[in-house]
Amino acid sequence: MPSDNLDDLFRQQLGQHATPPGADLQRRLAELAEAERLDNLFRTGLGSHASQPRRELWERLEDEHLHPEPRRRRGVVAWWQLSAAAMLLLALLAGGLWRGGYLGQRPALAVSKPAVRPAAGSSAVAVATSAGAAATTASGQLISNSLPTNTIAQSENKVQEKSTSQATASRLAPSSIPIATTTRPRRPATVPHAASSIQAKTRRPDAAAGVLATTGKRTIPAGQPQPPTPPEAPELPASRQLPALIAMMAPPDIIEVDVRRGPAPARPAAQAVVATAPSPAADQPRRRLRLGGLLRQADHLVHGEPVSLAEATGLPESLTVQARLGGRTVSRTIQL
Amino acid sequence: MTEPDLIAACLRGEPRAQRHLYNQFAGLMLTVCRRYLKRPEDAEEALLLGFAKVFQALPTFRQEGSFEGWIRRIMVNQALMELRRREPLHLSFEDFAQPENLASTPATADTQLQADELLALLQTLPPGYRAVFNLYALEGYSHLEIAEALGISEGTSKSQLSKARAMLQRRLAPQTTSF
Image 1 (cartoon, rainbow over the protein chains, first blue to last red):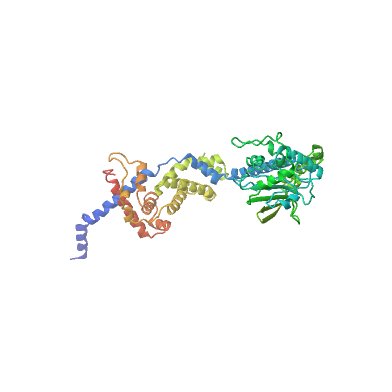
Image 2 (cartoon, rainbow over the protein chains, first blue to last red):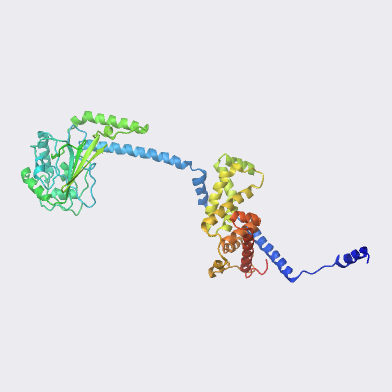
């Protein structure tokens, strides 16, 4: 058969012939069509669908990513607020110390709060007594003294008027200058006539210098035993009060805390001090000085220069806190 | 405001323009994120981070292609990153065949499937299947691109797409007689 005829034969037989797909191919084609329809269903259903985001999402985006600057601004404001708060604190501290007589000419006074933080559940009893008593009061009274004799006598009268738990002796040689002495019995005193110690338990230690002298005037919360009225109470001589105090302080678990100006003294201090209100006339020049110092420190603070607490408030450059518990003595000097 | 103007204003850092751009695309892009992520809060997190990247990368947009497509790609990448963090990407078929996973979206056969129902159906898929189906069927990625994006082989991509479709068809069968 000629080749042309052969070509024609195949062309005629198969050129228009349609072979039906097999079952397997049919299934595969159906799957593809089904898959395409499935894809189209999701594409059309979700392609242009919009979900509504929560409003907070934009605020978060703005705050956290787009405009975080306001936070920095808030930080600056916070810094100024902190500075203002620090200034106010300094002013209050200076005012409180002045009111308590610290800024006066008196070389010594009782300040309990800056040096001693009250222990939870414990009461604080501040006792001032004679320096010589330090040797005799082995139970650990807290003693400080630096006043001249006439001042001590004055303060003695005041103490006996206002607080029966304090005793002052005037025959003491001043030594180092303790600012305050505080004794903290862990157990409440049970001596009946140490009423003001009960009274003292009801309050926290005060920053004011007149703590010792004014405990009798403190208000007592309801439910606390009422101490005898100080003005009507018979005045006991110091020599009679001292044993009572010793008896009161007799329990062994007593913490003594001494606060002194300057570094730790070479020898142990054992002087008593009772703070009295300074005379306003004597304080006048010093107060002006303190106000100037305070303003100067405020200027330093504004300009970012170092601030001296001692210059601003008239506090000494350093304080020494000495605590005695039983036979152990711990001393620490704080640079202001 | 035209799209180039909007982009230029956003590049200048104008808050109103940024808000406008967000409002224009946030809804669409949240749906994109929801397609990949099961939990709504994860989808929102992806949206948030995605928009942060959009604004950050806006200077690199050359305005040659579709702006929406550019944003969508960023969102898809972010959603995939979130998916990797939140859900194990390769969950075995046996894990998927738990009874709780076989629950289908409640819908009647004669109702048109709504977008939320379709989303719910997608979220019944294992994370890997869901990602492959989304990328192939809805984003138009090739298997090669999917393999690169997910760190799998092309064969795995094809296989997971096939299984994902089969699962979806099984769930759709009782709901729609024909689709």
